[in-house]
Image 1: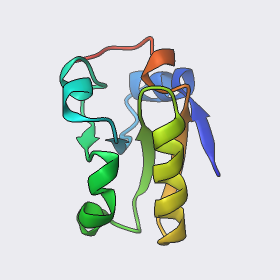
Image 2: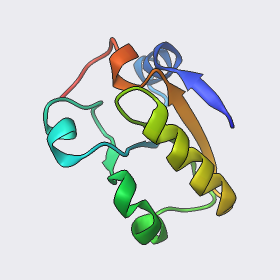
Image 3: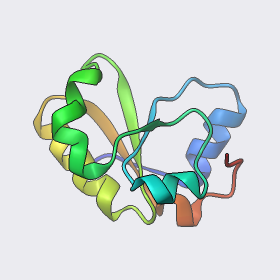
Image 4: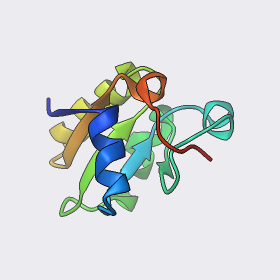
Length: 98
């Protein structure tokens, strides 16, 4: 499984890179604070909403600590998507939040 650190994601966003971030946490967790510009798809709904995603687009998966996003990454990889897990999740995030 491909992985990227929260710091690397933050640096890439600060340089203006257009990243496609999917936050797989629950609604209340996302409402408490999330990375600006994320797509929110709770882990439990991912298999039902993956038709909203493109296999041509690389995605970075985000959750609280990296566990759920790791499961999401493995699942989407098995379906042919280009996905990377943000290790450490929001607990490691030091950038801007909404």
